[in-house]
Image (cartoon, rainbow, N blue to C red; front, side, top):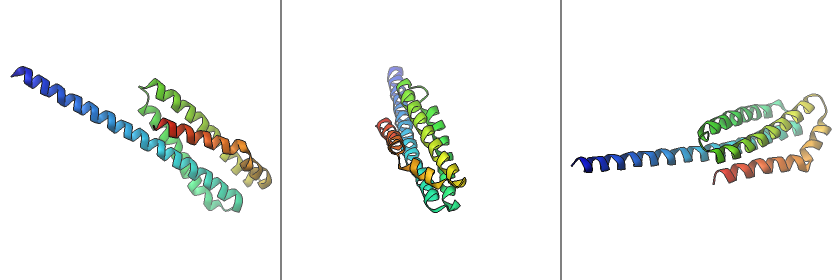
Length: 143
């Protein structure tokens, strides 16, 4: 009888651990997808501002960039016990920081009346390839 109870308890514990693992995996995937969406929103806000000069585009940009930083910090916490995932996340963080810095610099150029320079940065292949690398890293990590 005690043996059966022990087996039942162990089975229940394994089920709970499995559920927690699946739950955490799904949370990581949601966070990765949200970071990707917010990076796109930040880029969209930056481009809208540079093209129109309208500060209204900076609201979504500011919200998205803050959310990206918060979610990357949460992802770091979620993958802290998995060295392979943590290495991938550190690369994503580095790429994301570089892209956010680029977005910020072009917004500052627009504010300083240097729209032509801001637009020329947006048009570079480096700008596009940086965002592509961020997306690619996020998507490959979520698999």
